[in-house]
Amino acid sequence: MKLANPTVLPSGILGERQGMLEAAAKGGAGLLVTKSVTLRPREGYRGPVLVPTPAGGIMNAMGLPNPGIEEFSRTYAARVGGRPVIPSIHASSPDELRQLAMAVDRLGPPAIEVNLSCPHAGGSRPDALVSQDPAETARAISAICTNTDVPIIAKLTPNVSDIVEIAAAALYAGASAIAAVNTFAAMDVDVNFERPVLGNLIGGLSGPAIRPLALRKVADIAVAMRTGCIDQAPIIASGGAASGEDLARFILVGATAVGMGSAVYERDAGVFAAASAELDAWMQAKGYRRLGDFRGKVIDWLATEKECADEPIGKAVERAAEAGKAAPRR
Ligand code: RRO
Image (tube, rainbow, N blue to C red; front, side, top):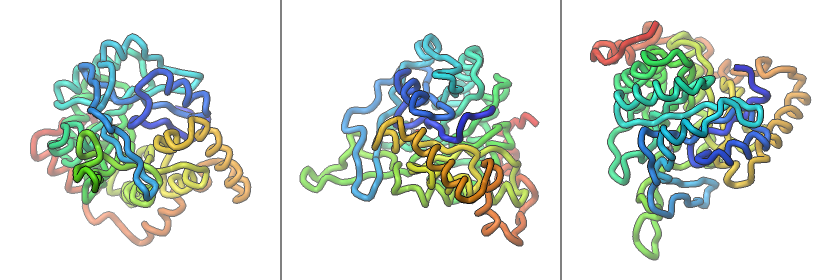
């Protein structure tokens, strides 16, 4: 997929309505990802659903508001404002994922994102997330890949100690790309009312406050790809990017494209064109002509003389396969 520029409207706190996709395309985003869609409509949680935090973050617990796959299918277009639109899907079981994959496949999308990582999909007492477990991750990806030939992007949670073993499982089971990362599990406390500030009590943190945390997770995956621990695949990064320099930071640690969600909320959809122009200026000053001239350059610092400690693909996937849950596509 050739993009006009490396900026992406990610699934997450925005993009529920067609209007958001149009605004992001008009604002210069190179790629659009829809708000995650579920089998049945969801209204979302009661408010407050979005709360800014003092240290440059935004906390959310939107609760996956979306019209459900039937209505979604009526309004979906594979391109909006000339930009490719990737549907994001979310489900609570592999069987639901299978049904969603078949429904979305019929819409002719350029790729499908599977959101395995909403930190509060289960309300205020969430179960473990799919992408907190390699076997569950492989099982989810397999359920989709066996029902569509469309490339699958696995959106992962940062709320794990080792994101590499999750990425390994996703790629092994047939994912073509990794989206990293979703929001960090979070909460804040209102000292007047002596209760959590979000309507759902707990939520996820995004925005500039998480940028160094997200960079580290993306770098971990890129190092594993460089050292041959896991398959090479595009990484669509997200986590607090808001400027051309931020785009450069994520591309320097190996990202192919970079999402900007909270930055749209903080500013407006013009942030995509502005950040792209800033990136162009940065590249010109550095003498770079294309993104490939500097992509992954910072990984040189991290991967030197380091080799994969395990067999390629790694112990996570072996464990997933042993559990009998992974049905690899290749
Ligand atoms: O809708 C949400 O509350 C939400 C989702 Br689906 C997600 O993947 N990540 C997030 O922070 N919020």
